[in-house]
Length: 358
Image (tube, rainbow, N blue to C red; front, top):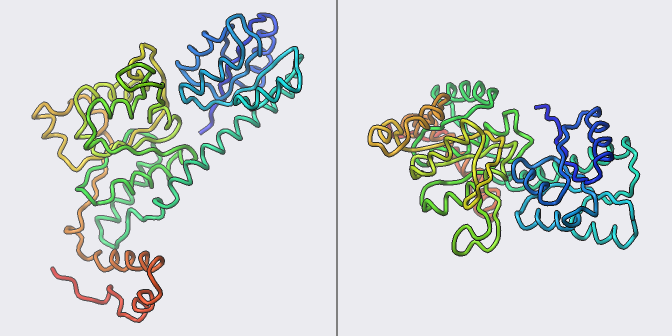
């Protein structure tokens, strides 16, 4: 996906700000403006930019106040500090406070363009690498392991679904591999270079699930001593996997519906509406139609998330795949087993040759 990089410039000198906005806009950036720290924080909370250009001295504070606000709200955005009174000590302090670059004025727009592209690229690469480190151990699984016709059809359908970048509902019993298929869809789809975040909705109280998903503001409830970034914001531009969505309480269902329809939400305890660009993959082992009939699941949410559905058949419906699956499991276990076990495995007859009870 081609994405125009959004840059927020925080500068109280109107003439200088207009020159920079016009110049960087011509170079392909989507520019947003603020004159003060408070206005900048409001802009960032509404929609986090790809990078921030901020003058060191502002009418209501300094660039360090903005950096502190970003830290307190766990917003990781590359910041470039500009100043007309540069010094070595100030540059060191800016970097220690979290700035990516410290550039003295006047600024050459060509240089600024190159710096912006570099810090945005570095920031995105670090995010991708962090996400990939979390996924590597879990993503080496094949969601279509087996030779059964049902699995061939599932793979054909999944390949088509992976191209469309829409909300997807995965249906299947517990243990059928819905999480593995969700990761495969993410890695195969147009958001593969972005973050994949999963959340199991079962077993979490409504308040805890709401805080995990949407985040919260400092003081929103007892124990909220700091603002918290929600998983939706952490997955921005990527994919969020909501496992066991059928266990989600009604009040949170309504908020998820707003995300599906409008890509908007509120943090707990915050009046500010935020935007997010995520693909939602939902999963359930329950029959959502029955839950809708029992008024336990919103019909409008079911309609929105079930337009694209994939059903994973349980193993009992494809027993001919059992030898293939057990062989793969033993092979994986053998990688970490003591040598005596691995030697025994190599000398044994393949499980694929053993009869399977029908």
